[in-house]
Length: 288
Image (cartoon, rainbow, N blue to C red; front, side, top):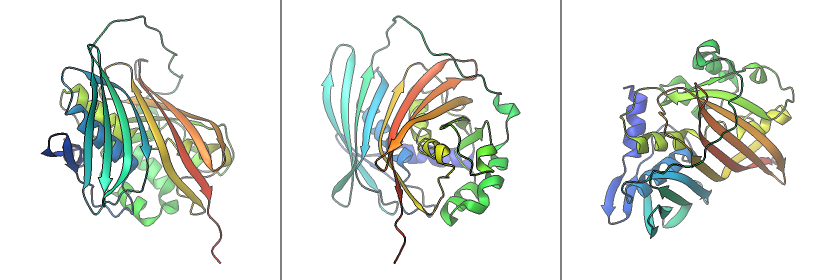
């Protein structure tokens, strides 16, 4: 297991404080606010700790305040319902006495049903696209210092964009992108763990998809970007330490908000998860 994956697993391993109460820590990597995917993943861990014999099938979350990476995050779980087939949980993340994040999650016992899916996009396999090192080399000059430090260090999630050309030119394009992702080390055979790791990774690059239509980039200092809400649905079992194609698009952007969607496919074409997010995309006012 890589050191970065080991650190991610330690971040997801919440400390129980009391019944329905957990504490999570943030990595000290110099970021000014907590990465949204970390809070999603930790909140899902907290919810899963209160459910037995059922896997998560969906979560819906709102980011309320920016998280402070310097202090722990307290997760309070409300056990809303345990039915014959489904369980529902509500999780609130708290810092400095205020909620910073709110999430509802639903869990279902394993069942059979009618099946169909949209086909996987026709893209090259991960072995035939540029490596993560090529992406970092392409973007390094544009990154702010905290992001540059992150990309220069070992990372828990490996990402390989199918097409690097958008990073080489500010040309406006159709708002979509395909990225192969996986954990950068092997994970234990626990389906809940793989769901939490994917929840963590699902916040990477999603809001950035809206900027493709405008020839802009996530590190653009003239833009203010923040996740506002996040939804994730789990359709089938999968492994987060094996390559998954993250297919993303952005149907609309306006009123300083952008809406983005994503689907996750295994390399043999199974659709295993879907996600959606609305985020703040605001032009910064020039300083006086």
